[in-house]
Length: 109
Image (cartoon, rainbow, N blue to C red):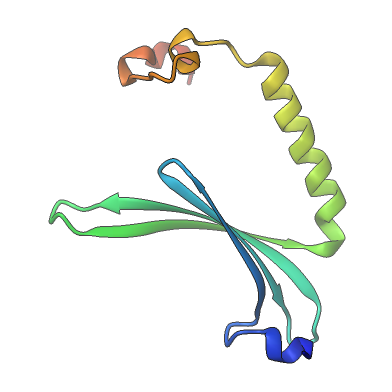
């Protein structure tokens, strides 16, 4: 099957949704008119309005192949920092969290 036939109307070549709690992340491979590939990462959250209807709030990052290595390096460093330095919270370990566990004074300004 030719690559052109695999594309959908929006130029998507591959899509991988990842559901994570109240959020869904979409990793989409797309191509430019010049057939150069790039990645979009979209965070989607369901929001309920005052009228009871819901909408999706979306945030999108475009990542071009020349930036993949630097992006991955930075992401890995940030994840490693969190793993090594994040405070351990007992309620998270038990699977129970509450908004009362957060002190806004701890967040800083």
